[in-house]
Image (cartoon, rainbow, N blue to C red; front, side, top):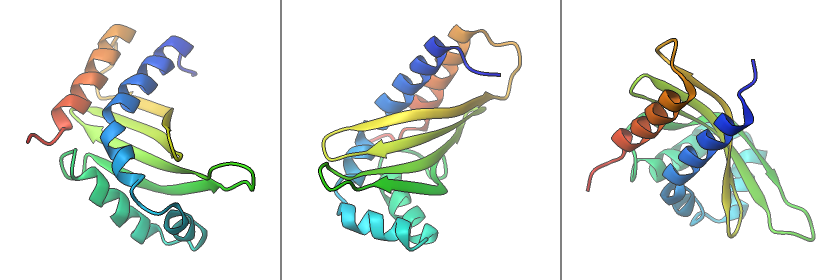
Length: 139
């Protein structure tokens, strides 16, 4: 069953807004290093790198690398790295792809699951927003 486009856009906005700091932190890594980790199937090293970037902003274990990544490095454009990610917190599970380029990042939602049936779209948006907010590390 596909998610209505408005709901998908809301989910992508919520997750994208929540990951601005994470994307900024990941962008500090040399793109050639990220590409080498992906090309050489060094999933554990990539997971460590992603974990060190996420733990600054989210509680341990709530946001992690989902063991799949890709990259595009065309001759005439800036490389982009795509990392499949998983978020689990407050009875919400979100699976998405975080794409990081030189100046921008984006999120493509693959699926969002709620541990409660019968939620309307507004309740799902509220739950997703609250889950990301409560998973944030407090200064």
